[in-house]
Length: 156
Length: 165
Image 1 (cartoon, rainbow over the protein chains, first blue to last red):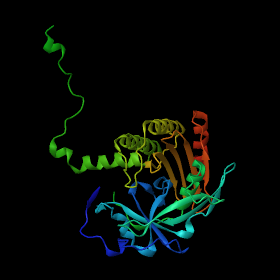
Image 2: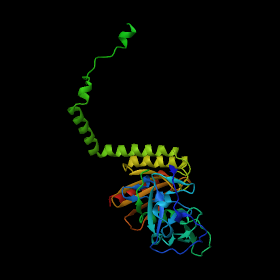
Image 3: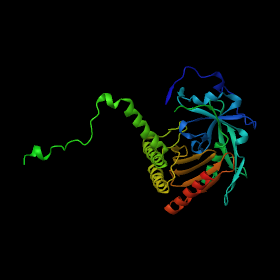
């Protein structure tokens, strides 16, 4: 459910600012979540997805900013979770597959400068987004879910 | 014999309660006793969990695209039917799930939690079946399940062992 929000905070506007690909290991990343995916004290990996999972970076935002949409609506009932950049497994491999590397990428939007994505590439660094195998995706989602903390509790 | 006599109701074998009796303390106490007996029964708790899980699964057919606000696809018929098959096997194996949820990857997740131990079976829209289990921040074990009854039963037993170890 979304509802109209009175005003977008100034910090969210890009206003000509460039990309900043310098992420600190202790920088937090924020994401909306639904109450269903918080199960008896565990955040389920089922609440994460590929490809290019959307996140907001702490350096340029507050946790509640992820509750605002580009359309000027507010995601009512959603919670906000967080994890550190250092919680992203940098390198994963399953038997018989490539080595996949994961990293956050700053992808600013006009109305959400902090917008970032979780990217995947091969160890050979193609420079493009590479879709990992299903097993690797599941493993990454599980590893991330193990490090999630809840910043704003979901009610929906 | 006249029709009215043929269909006449036999006399009641119970005493009808008046409105006052139905709300009285004895009646409320007996309802409480029944409730506590149900809660104490492993069988009834498992049955309730399966009924709840099947109801949750049915609800997913009403989800629309972008249900998670991050453009997730709703679980399709393939994922829902496979999840229903797994629930049937879980019922036979007497391992009730903690919750059934839609997956942001597009599909259905059947989740199990016991304290620090977590596991799920994910039935994806692509037809793939994946499972994961871990305890706390220990290394997760992820594997692919072949879509046949034998493999699903094997996965269910692995998860049972994980939850009770």
